[in-house]
Structures are given as structure tokens and as C-alpha cells.
Length: 339
Image 1: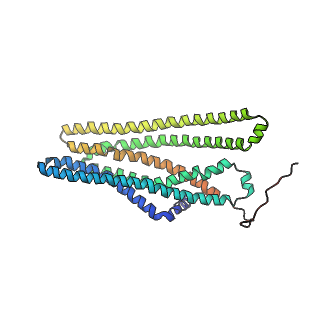
Image 2 (image 1 turned 60 degrees about the vertical axis):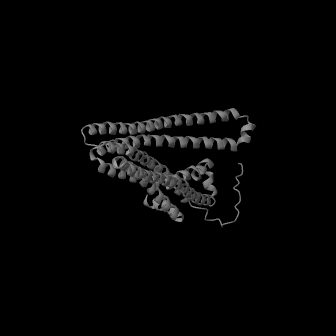
């Protein structure tokens, strides 16, 4: 696996500057998300108790700071979305060039045992999964770690007891997300297998359309297609069931964390162990440590899909090329006499 990962990371080589800038703005954007609630806490904790004219001046200044931070976050998100995807597309193009170039060097014997639909999937859907991993994987991982650790440290400093109550749900949320994300991943893998079968069936049918029409086999071909299409819909239903459980479950847990933090916080306020401003801070930070859990789970799925796609990519590149052929020379089309 180590050697394969080295080969995978080698595709970052020509785009190191783009990669580092993408990671810089990902880290900066995550930091901005952690800073804004602290500014709000300072306003509610300190500024509201200033003398009126000083409070107005401070509020205007801090409002400008928050507006600047929001604009900075917008720019960071734009940079990640635009230039990050460009980097991923360029690496995908490099891999497509490599595998297509290798296709040109393979023997007739290789193509005799392969379906065009499967070869196309290696150069299209597999490479898309790899590029999604190469682009989204590192930034999602870094952003999630910064947000979770940053939120935890800040909330511990604000109120340790309430922080432990809030973060007590994270392990449960993570286990739930990993379990159903795994189920969902397997279901989506079956979807890809079913669509590959449909593509192969369509390829066979259309490539032999003259024979189909000559023997008036259109109805038979439609039956075959309907069977494959129905199997695909059935597989989709299973994947959507797990998707529904996954999304609704995580949404419910995020809401539950908010409710528990609110109820616990109010109870602590009544016993004068937490301030109202600190409770507001906790409520502002909840999304900062629940959303990263979803991103980390998505990252594991991206890694599985992308890495398995890269393994299939390397399988093709490892197939021996036609060493007997001199580059640029034409080869006769194989002809088999009918016996």
C-alpha cells in the first residue's frame, strides 16, 4: 500500500504550489469559522457593559472585523472550490493521458478478453473518484481536524463541564455515521456495478444493431434492457434507504446535541455555574464540531472509492505492452478463417 500511495501522491508533483495554496486557504477558512463566535462572545461579555458611546464605537469596529472575516471566509471557500477543483481536474487529465497512452500499447489478445464498457469505466468513473480524493481528501481532513480540536479546546476554556456534555455525543455520532456510511458505500458500489452491466448490455446491443434488426430481435433486446434497468432501480432503492437513515439520523443527533446543551446550560445558569454569554457561545460552536464528523466519514468513503479506483488504474498500467511492435508501425488486423 505504501508504494501505491507514493505513486498516487506523485501526481501532486506538477501542482505543488496549487496544492499548498489550496491547503493554506482551507486552514485559513477553518480558523475564521472558529474566530467569529469568539468575537460574538467578546461583544456579549464585554462590549454591552461599556459606556454607551464607547460601546457604539467598539460595536462598529467589531462589526467591521466580523464583516471582513466573513468576506475572507467567502474568498477561502471560493478558492478551494475553484482552484482546488482545477487542480483535481488537471491530475485527472494526467492520469487519463497515462492510461490512454498505455491502452494504445496493449496487444490484441488483451482486447479480445475485455469489454469496451469496462475499459471506459477505468478511464472515466474510476479517474473521477481518484480526482475527488486527491482534491477533497486532504482539505476535508485538515479542516475537520482543525474545527473539532479547535472547538473542543475553546469550549473547554469557556466551561469544561458543558464542553464534556456537548462532546459526549460525538463518539455515538461517529459510530452511527461510520456504520451507515459503510452500508451506503456498499449500496452505491452495487449501483455502479449495475450501471456497468447496463452499459455493457447497451454496447453489445448497439454494436450488433444490424444483426438485431435483421432477425427482428428488438423485443428480445428490450426485455434484456428492462431486466437490467429494473435491477438498477432495485439497487438504487436500497442505497436511498441507507441514505435516508444516514442523513436523518445525523440531522437528529445534531439537533439533539443543541437541545441537550441548551437544557444543561440553562440548568447550570440557574445554579449560577455558567453565564448566558457562554451558553450562546456553545450554541454558536455546535456546527463547528458536528459538521466535521460528517466530513471525516465522507473522507473515509472518498478514500475507499478513490484508492480502489487507483488500484484498478495501476492494474491496467501493470499489464505488459506489445513489446514486439516497433512504435509507429502498422499491424495487420487479425483474421480468422471460418472452419
